[in-house]
Amino acid sequence: MSIAVASAADLPGAVGRTATGAWFTIDQERIRAFADATDDWQWIHLDAERAASGPFGGPIAHGYLTLSLLPRLTSGLLSVGGSAMVVNYGLDRVRFLQPVLAGSRVRAVTVVASAEPTPQGCRVGLRTTVELEGSDRPALVAETLTLFVSDSH
Image 1 (cartoon, rainbow, N blue to C red):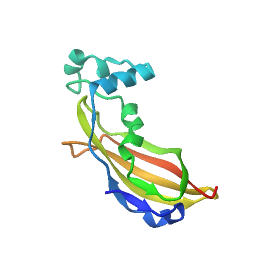
Image 2: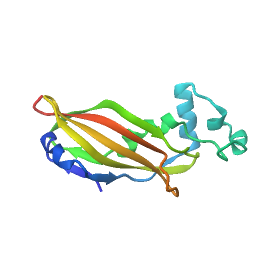
Image 3: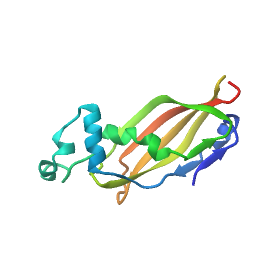
C-alpha cells in the first residue's frame, strides 16, 4: 500500500504512516554492472567460485548498490499532489545490516518519520528498511531526506 497526500502542505499529517514496496531481485548481472560503473571489482561480488567458499557462501551485492536502489525500491510509495519537483536532500544515517546474496529479493518498507514545511514546500524524513526475503534481519536501514517542491515555487 502506498501513501498519497493532496499537497506538500499535507505531509505533516502523513508522519507515522508506512508503505511497503514490491519484491525486486538483485541479480548477478546488476551486480556486475554496478562494479563496472564504480570500478569496485572485489572478488566477493564477482568471482562466483571464490565467493562460494568465502564468508557468505556466494557473491554478494555491493552495499552501495543496495543503497542506490532506494529510488527504485521506494518508487510510488509516497505520492504528493501539486509537486513541481522532488529533490533528494541527503541521508542522515545508513546501516548495512547483512549482505544481499546475488539472486536475492529485496523490498522497501518506508515510514514517514518527519515533515518540515519549508519556503519551497516540505522536507520529509523517511526511514526505509530494505527487507531481505526469507530473513528476519533487514539488509539495510536508511534515514533519507527528500524535498517536495510545491507547484507554486
